[in-house]
Figure 1 (cartoon, rainbow, N blue to C red):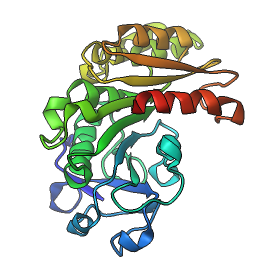
Figure 2 (figure 1 turned 90 degrees about the horizontal axis):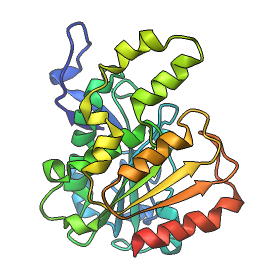
Figure 3 (figure 1 turned 120 degrees about the vertical axis):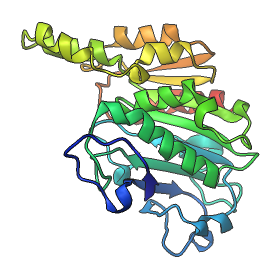
Length: 280
């Protein structure tokens, strides 16, 4: 668990100490013997001082799942594809993938609101980074679908939350199917002839979750995975984000897949090549 001080709206239930709690899981390939007693690979882990005794990882991934995702079901992907690191390594040569449940999901407190997503993401990322990143750690900010908005926000404002002991050149971005949220909402509304009604709602989307604006302000190398037949975040919407992206990036089309489609063996080569490109 990670404790954060997030804004509340009147009527919201508060946790003890008036703090928000973000449920956090970690997947790692380090040997269990070096982990705190309360932790194991893919198990819920309190970010406690016990982690100070665990060597800092070579690769640290901060992962933001989509609306249907849950941290407790998260995998180490794509860390398990980095230089064959699906095998157990010695401490200090390992990878760690830290995934959150945002406010209102899983056992995280609060309600699922867009207006608190950016501040909650900053709290999660800054605490994990401060505790687990060393001066030689490479950090990937990963997002899927709605989680891409939190990842893009963090990438565009690295100086606001990243600790000074990690070189900015050691950060990268890995995103799948990032949405321009207002456009996605309006496209869905068109199916129900509700565009006029939902146009009012889209005006309340916070600027911090404007994917194209964040893309224009980001200076990290990035990989974009795009589902060829995405029925929710249409490929033309995704391409506008790709085109707005200010730094070098690679786009990988996942042929035959819809928005939530599972990667198959046929996608493995192109995804592995993207991992190799980002590592270089």
